[in-house]
Amino acid sequence: MIGFLVLLPIQFAVAERADREKPMYLEADRATVEDVNRKEGSRISTFIGNVVLTQGTLRILADKVVMKEDAQGFRHATATGNLVSFRQKRDGMDEYVEGWSEQADYDSKTDKIELFRKARLKRGFDEVQGDYISYNMSTEFFQVTGSKERGVESGTDKRVRITIQPKNKSE
Image (tube, rainbow, N blue to C red; front, side, top):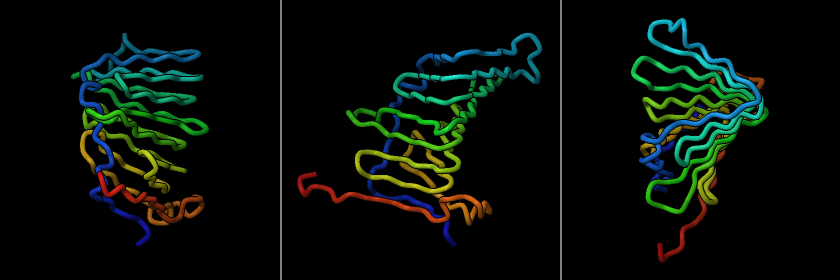
């Protein structure tokens, strides 16, 4: 089994808790917002070209973002591009978690981000890489899977790679 379930005591990051309560801002070269014909209480918006999604300290950069908003106001964004990137400040610390992939799915209801293809997640000098990374932004749990386990044999990230730097004895 090439996939890897990770739950390490490296305190891999708890996202800035105040971000959830902040407004979400989107910038793009163009946008299409569906508001008149809300299907099943949801709205779909598409942002194309140099997209910047910001909510508090969370920042996602992509070529394209498709945003679905449900009747309760929760948002699910699918970001694609020639490497999508995200960055978010850790709660109560002067440290950021960063990630890169070809596709990123962000769900505000579950506070989770999923990275697909060429996925990389980094905090300080600690890093995980694989074909797929699921990262819960409000806990310290992440899961990394290689392309072979996902059934994507053509993927370049067949195995999972993790780098954990030694900690200072004073930490």
